[in-house]
Amino acid sequence: MGSKSSNTSIEDFLTPTFQIIQGGMGVGISDWVLANIVCRQNELGVVSGTALDGLLIRRLQRGDPGGHMRRAMEKFPVPEIADNVYEKYFVLGGKPENKPFTRQGMFRINNSKDLLNLTVLANFVEVYLAKEGHNNPVGINYLEKIQIPHLSSIYGAMLADVDYVLMGAGIPRQIPGILDSYVKHQATSYKVDVKSSKFADSIETHFDPKKIVGKINEDLKRPEFLAIISSNTLANSLIAKCSGKVNGFVIELHPAGGHNAAPRGKYPVNDKGEPIYGVRDEVDFEKIKDLGLPFWLAGGYGSPEGLKKARSLGAQGIQVGTLFFLSDESGLYTPIKREVLKNIRENGVDVLTDKIASPTGFPFKVVSLAGTNSEEEVYKSRKRVCDVGYLRTAYRKDDGNIGYRCPSEPEKTFLKKGGKEEDMIGRKCLCNGLIANLGLGQLQKHGEIERPLLTGGDDINKVKILLNSEKDSYSAVEVINYLRS
Image (cartoon, rainbow, N blue to C red; front, side, top):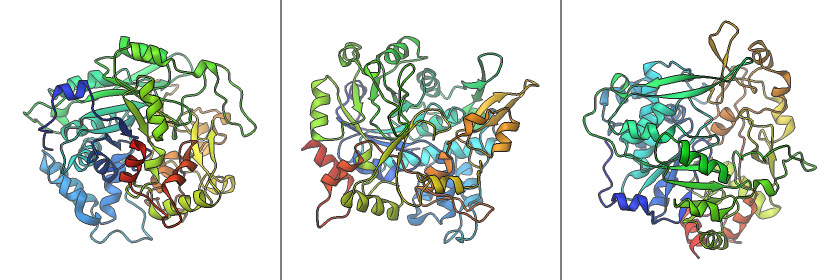
């Protein structure tokens, strides 16, 4: 099991010393490499917890360059689980380029033991590597909207002694209680939203560590829970109704990259079709401060001035994504990274807050880049495929059984499952697009490799301040030094 943080006491968690949280971006953008570097600068490095099961097996099929996956897998407390995954997916020297990646199964309410074990292992590996070689806290970020994998994912992260769990893109009321349960390896459940034409509906998915992973005697450390929110109302609701203790908040405003909360009520759009945020969407920081919990501000605060302003508003500090997104250590495929930075240096890049691109229904920031699914022609030419499935939602069939659908899957399939035609318009496959950002795009049966789909904050062009005439890249350490300057 991962080593305990010997110089970290409970008081450190109650009064965090870090001012900068590195955002848990996309799929694999905030990977263990980036988080580890940030932690070594005494700030909070965060790994993205999205799709780690799929990333682990694709990294193994690429030959595990550097042997990092294997090194972490050897520390997993149940060796036979790690050995089984390694033997099944590792390809010495990497798979041929003309062969597709072997896929794991898609998540359902009831999942195979193999898929659950893979998910536990993958989350353990990412956190273990982020914590390796230092004693500072590490966080992991999940999207509440991707509900079914939560139980196995969080347990795997806790096996590696994760220090902070962060969650947004939904209302994460159930998470604190799950963290409490896993300290003693207790079985727990998660209530999953179910679409139903007749009534509000839900169903529970279950996870029993002893039955899936096996008996582990040592108690686990309960990580701190930071809810990512965008309103005072939600902050109050979480404190009152969460299944356990909330330890702090990240207040993420709409200029942030990735998914944004939609404006409250009926809202207008600008000439690009982007939602316009108004007075009702503003956060009262004095009321947040009165809650007595530490909080960090995100979305437009990624600068020395932003850090200073956040501190003046009573915040512990800031969460920063976009600056780290294009740093040398992020998981973004290097050729893509270089092209985006070149465009920023020369003419700048556009970011569109697309209110319909994401199958989740949340507005989603899309960075314009030639040859990616940000372009209408590229998006329309893509043959619809749903073979990853993290953003599928459960729905109740007429016979009462549970099915799964996604508005970006093939049209006929979605309509056959009871989906509405208007819900498919403009929907993009985030699962395949975000994985392709890492240079791990799937080779589909029709011969096409999945194209990237980039996301970033409104202030993406401000990264130019980290470049000069002699530099076409920058490091995560330079980002931190800049923010502290």
